[in-house]
Length: 390
Image (cartoon, rainbow, N blue to C red; front, side):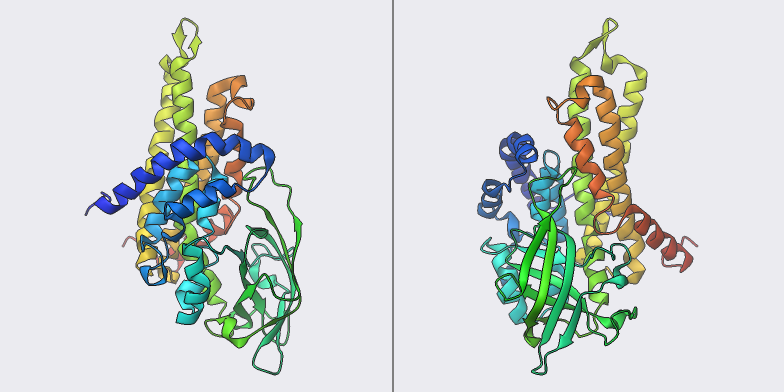
């Protein structure tokens, strides 16, 4: 069993680490305070080939896979979760297309993500249907010519303002209250089409700079060629989200690492009671506990990423994928809290990044399946013996 990274992945990690330290770190506070999209970082990621990490070489990417993207996001998230989110958005909306889309769909919609000529966003949640995905009310009805007409509202869509196209899920059953999985279908919807409108944007506590908001669909005509997979393919939404668990987890690992590194340097320099804060056993134990939990989260996450790259994101693998997302994001919340406390009053001030880490971390336990949803999936895996030790 080899726990080491390949030479190619080590080189990727080191490259992204330098970019994050030299370019992302100096911009993190400004991005948060201005809440302006960091186009300069997008172009930097594009020029460094980071937008196509998860995209196959056939479609212009580097083919580094979900593990490669996970490693890159971990490095960027040490300093800015908003910048890390930009990299995550190269996979979340393209995931269903990569999993079940046609060659033409991949050529038309995925390839431009790799070269940065287009951006995309993912539309699943609705005002009354967050964790209860099947409560969605966005409808797609046949138009008589083989296409579909979509009406509805999607919300909490990261990157909605910047996106050129959207991966949208809608009810295709006659009864919009139908909850069977074959009642939902995936569509690619272009921003430029009639009836497509960006609604309000959200006032977020953290992860500012990449807009999150509403997508309004009013009599939007979608050709049959833009159906992803099969009509009635709700399972595709779950496969896409399952495969994303390690990518979100990487944002948590990076944030926890960034917080702990900053706090450790601070307590080693901060004098107190004739010593430094780092000399006190209580602080040392907190550092040790967080360091252990970060490494545990990393092992869970890298394993999950390797599984996802092997297309092991169906039901029997869900517990392992959900563990990574659940544990890593909860570690991020804990680390941001404990590390802020290590700095004392200074940690509460914007002179230090701790309050930014603290605000950003909480989002991670909510997006793409809350911690409670992940725990339910893990428990179901044990109950169904998908995760078993006997």
